[in-house]
Length: 391
Image 1: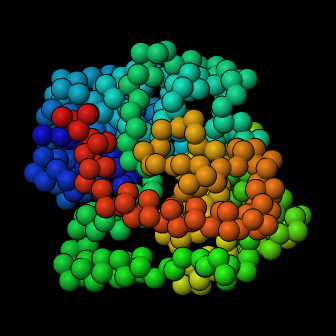
Image 2: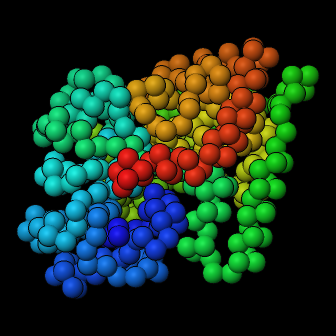
């Protein structure tokens, strides 16, 4: 039996619950003398088992409450469960957990992917960088993770699965009791996925690029500034300032006060960078009008917009991810076009796509075919993420 401790719903835990019927339960915190954690899934209570899965957000909330994790959480769990598995639902490749917590875990599952070079975890790189320093080992972290701790990190499920219609159908029973409604939604999603048509070389989309996104990372505003100054025909902008922002002053994630968000929103409006969000039908129609879809770093390097590009059979342009094991088959020049993480060549790449569209067009179609193939392997994908950990 696998026990779960979480205060947030997330796709990795959804997948574990959906694919392990009868083998997963909510940890009875009262019986074990643990801090309270209201169950989010309709599962039986358990007090022991082969493993316990703890969502990192719950641990962070306990630290903020002044709970001593080693004595009040990990020690009671060690006495009842064979292994302690952490799940960090944050999308960034960089770690949010401190070393003191990581060393208490047997395994940490990362949803955002993992570095090929694990030494990068000991440097200020990735989402925390406002300049797009994703791989240069310039600034070492004050707290170093030893190799034995870094070896505990495993790749789990990328956030792209949340747009995978097969995955959505698999976990939908966790949230929708009506079988008829589940079937209707599943049918509708699969029908919509068949609507996009390939871009024709004889009648290419009239616009070069498409980018709409909320300000979840400071680089998004910088990208829109670059696009606005260019001669490219594009559509989009910043749709609003997110409550949580990444990349400012080296911080992975910071929560903005309401007054700060309003100030930033006003600054962006004065720069002409704001574009009102579109209803979903209009949004997907607007993608069809563009040759390329731009996906930029948000709270993590992987973004839902990547899947939107592939689903729409358009060229995906995103920042270089060759240093990360994402769990998705990114192949630059075949199903994706990488720009530099600092965005310095973004406009030049888009200009080349506009000028030499026949040379790029097949990238969008290959991206679509690869996306469909990846979605068909949902069960194997989940098994690959969990089998090495749970057996």
